[in-house]
Amino acid sequence: MQKTIEIKDQAGTEDLAARLAAVAVKGDVILMHGTLGMGKSAFCRAYIRALANNPHEEVPSPTFTLVQIYDLEPVPVWHFDLYRLSDPEEVHELDIEDAFSEAVSLIEWPDRLEYLTPETRLDIYIEPGPTPDARQIKLVAQGDEWVKRLAALDGTAA
Image (cartoon, rainbow, N blue to C red; front, side, top):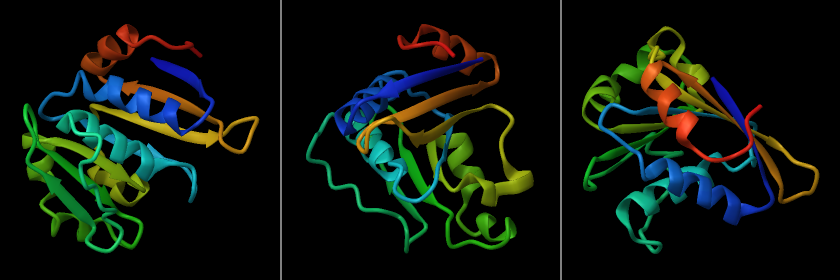
């Protein structure tokens, strides 16, 4: 199942991230697809801030650390940026399997995972919209649980 949502600006991205954070459960894997500057990190920051119930939560980019861990309630979040990795074997060093089982995993540049990509996941594709601030966000559910949650999410179905 997939839904495509037209977002007018960053506030729309933040709203979508908050709606997804509201249904977060342990074991969620969310893969963020898009070119540089499309808003993958902005989406992840908004998701983490919404889950923390703190719009001022400090959410640094994991570009250089590769992973940032947030010990939040009701579920921790591991935010990965795999851009600098060249081999999926390097992902093991980040304890990603622990994140898959114990937390929500937000993963930027998921193509680096290759064979480690979980079957059950939500793929989010962010593409340019009709104006500089607009985005077209495609949500693709992989697995029955994500299909149910995505069906309940309001927005424009593709």
